[in-house]
Structure formats: structure tokens, C-alpha cells
Image (cartoon, rainbow, N blue to C red; front, side, top):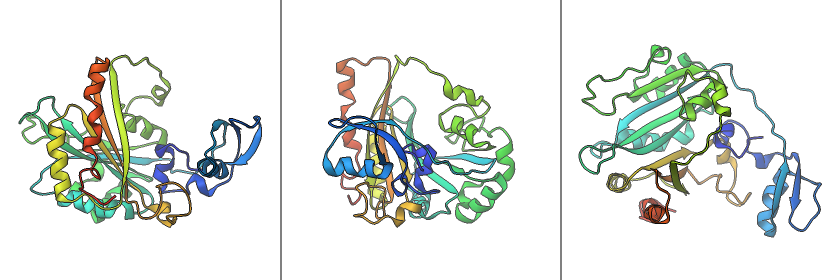
Length: 302
């Protein structure tokens, strides 16, 4: 089973989505006694069709095998409206790549100011289910623009000491175990032990708001112009664009009541982060998240 977590399922590219599998689970519907057994696919589809509500009490996961070593990477670029050819290439390629590689795009504002001191960064971030040398071979064919070499994956990232051309670190690559890749994607340092994923802390300083959407067409030039203008005028905006494809391209539009199906190219998340104050007045300032929506701005087909 590919779980609801996009990290466990790698967005459904590599293994079948959970709606294709039937697993026993314990589900308590609001008007039915607990202990009733249904298949997971029945549970996920039926409540939507019948408008019933309940709580999943327990479920089972079907695990899939992964290699002993996987390779994670990030390639950072400054959003240059004069040349968005790499972004267009990624948009037209990402959902068609081999099933063992996943590349998403993170768009974020770098810098706290709203002038020349800030810029919009595009990060090509992903994982390859295999060793670094195989990833390098694949990227030389698909994305030679990244300039990845095998030795890049076995040394500390090279940093531009003067940072004359932001971003300072343009590429990172690590060959690690699958569980260590989870540390990387959680924002931790690659040499941190996996046990750090079990740590719990009380968050009283960091807050965020988010929304999501699905894109049926690549973002055109005017969309990227809108993104840059809006990101530079806001505090803490982030966009995460995940390509779909893979198994999801085999799902017809009317088969299941979910947007993870053929015809949708990307899942996109809009996020606003801020620190410190979560009073009603401050939170209200961040409610304009819907302004970022590409579909509401007419930049893509809904």
C-alpha cells in the first residue's frame, strides 16, 4: 500500500496507490458500532459517496522494497525571468521520468527585505532509488544543466565563498540509506542520526498557513512573472510543486473521487510561514494566501 503520506508513497509514482489495494482495517462510523471490517479502498471511496463520517482506528501498510542506498539531491537556482527554459523543461519532463526518480520544485523567497536584497529561489529537490553513479548517468541524459558529478555526492557541498552569485550553495547530493533520506527531507543535516525523527518539541514560535491545488497545464511565463512579483512583496511565501504521473496516469478521470489521476500534471502547495506572534491581528495578515493561487490569477488552466 502506498500510504497517504507522499513521502512513503513517493507520490504514488513507484508503487500502486492505496485505492488499488484492499486491506483490513478497523473503522468506526458515526452511526455504526465499532469493529466493522471493510477494505481500505471501500472506506476511502464510500464515505465520500455516502457523505458519512467516522474514525479510522487502525490500518495495515503494505511495504515495498527499496535499495539499500538511495541518493537525495537539491539543485538551487535564482529565478531569472529572462531565462526560464530549465523550469519549462522540468514542467514538461518531471511527470514522465523513470519511476525510480522523483524531482519536485520548491519556490521560496530568500532574504527578509522587499527590495534588491531579496530574490526568489527555485530548488529542484528529489530522490533517486539507487546509487549516486546511476543517478549521475540519468541526469546527464535528462538534465545536464544540473552539472552533477559522482564525486559531488560524497563530499560536503561546495559553497561560493564570496556569494557573488546567489544562491551560495548551488548543488547538494548524498548517497544514503532510505531512512537517512527522511532526515534530509525533514530539513535536518544529512549526518544527523535517524533517531532525531522521533524527537518531539513544543512549537510556540513558528506558524504557517497553507492551501493546495492541482495543475492541468504547465505554468507559462506570465505565471512565473506573477510568482516573482508576489513572492517579493510578501513575507515567508513558499510553493511546493510535486509532479504526478507514474501509476496515477493510469487512473481514469471518473474511476475514483480523487485528483491523483490522469490529466493532472502537478500537485501544488501554497505556504506562508512566520515566527513569533500568533495573535488574531498577525494571523489575519497572512490570510491572503489565496492571492498566490495560479488558477485564480488565470495563469494556468484549472
